Length: 213
Image (tube, rainbow, N blue to C red; front, side, top):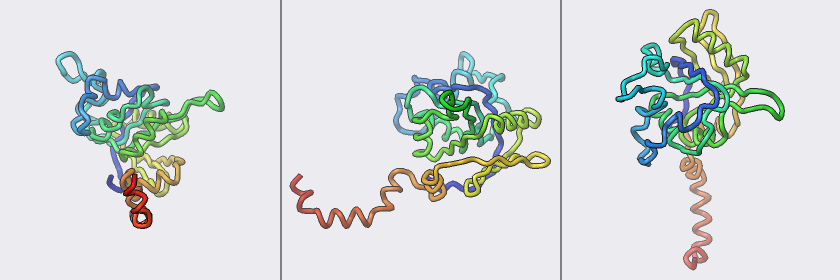
């Protein structure tokens, strides 16, 4: 997993709430576990017409957003099944960040992302940022006014800057351990290897017991 560095990219607006993992990558594409080639099937049922012709009405097919790297959507993104393929498809298409708002308050609050999807994203280097509904609404309005609008994500500073005139800045919260993983580029294996010396020390002191198992 590559270390996450600040970057600037085009924003793609997906104005839909409760986008489930079957919409992100339909079940017929789950046969492969090679973790490659899923980008072309991202949002397949919305993206293509019969005969796999591109649907010109779907935002992903519009020329303005062909090189988008920041996906902005509505609450509860990635709900449904736990398929990790959904994150693979988003990453392999070229997105590096997904931004979504929470909805409601208190007991009625719905998060920006489903828990399993968020966890799968951390493992695969996809940064998921939850902003307030008001902030996300401002982003949607800005993109509608300026199609192809770019933003810069500063993970270290925990900010997203829209390159409007004047620029608009939004701050986000993130789990410190997740932030550290992204900044260092550590997946689960990388996290384990950080403790390699301790593991080797344990194995050297317990080799007899381990050999009896």
